[in-house]
Image (cartoon, helix red, strand yellow):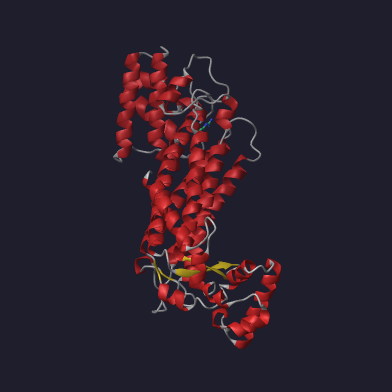
Length: 462
Ligand code: ARG
């Protein structure tokens, strides 16, 4: 029936197939853009009035109609009808139902193509701020935990084999660094995306005298896009945002993996608080780190979103294509997943204890002090490559005789190198080694203290 036809579909014969209505709609997920859509529409209408394309009275009607609609949505009074396809048409239809003729003028000089690109940039700006706040909270939790373990020694690992001794604080601070890069990366993404595509229309701009700079300014963009064709087809910011989320997910997943391993009976390095563990439906003794496992697992969804976004972009001809509607599913998945995982990780980090007794009781395993012993020999004038060989032989000797380097007598040491003297005992043993680290950024207590002070100051400014 022509009467119930949507105005933007007058050109089509008959009614859309019911399958079409379900398949084409994005309202079920893009409704969360409503605030941004309304902000964009108010800015656009204000500009139309300034440019005398609509009257001031019409602008007032449009603005109050849109604000009312916004309240209806916020209060759950709005009826989302998928026949309107998306949030843009649903809001416009409601506006027209409310105010009539003036509502029909809102879309002057605009297309859903520049509208949706604007909405998404506005959404993403806010989402980035939220994620940055969550990242900061996680960093603070790490820095605080690090403050409790400045002097406590643990093994470091390479290839998951014992490497050199470190203080627990240094280990924890390594995560603050990772998340700092994530914070900066998101900020860069936010900077780059903060230009207004509004006024680019469907693809070629408009014959009407739109003032693009004024809408950009009203919406807090720092400029306008230069090319209308690019403006409506560009989703680089989506791919970049999801990539940034994917790296956050990677960092969270590596943390989760560490702590899943560290909380096993075999390691026993950390105790994850019971409130962040689950049990088993069958094995009554179980205390499982499921939340950490979920953080690790959720990285998969974020990576999937990244791959999906990149694939959506590939092979699209220039200009807007409806493929792009799918972008929202993936930016929302990436943002939501990472946001949830960041909050969970912050809670877990804030309640985790390192079992320092258990850790220190095992510190003499794995020859953590071997590298420091080689460097001791360098201090005595032995070439490093030769020192490396001497210590290698000493370690083999210890393994055969079931000893630790620190238990060897001076006479035993002397059999391997005449350069080893009585002061060697000051340079070996995991606990002594960490206080011997002198390089900037090393994993010793002095450096950890300095880094904690740095982070406390830097994070407090956020
Ligand atoms: N819901 C659409 C999207 O998310 C809005 C743009 C539709 N434009 C069009 N010309 N059909 O991309």
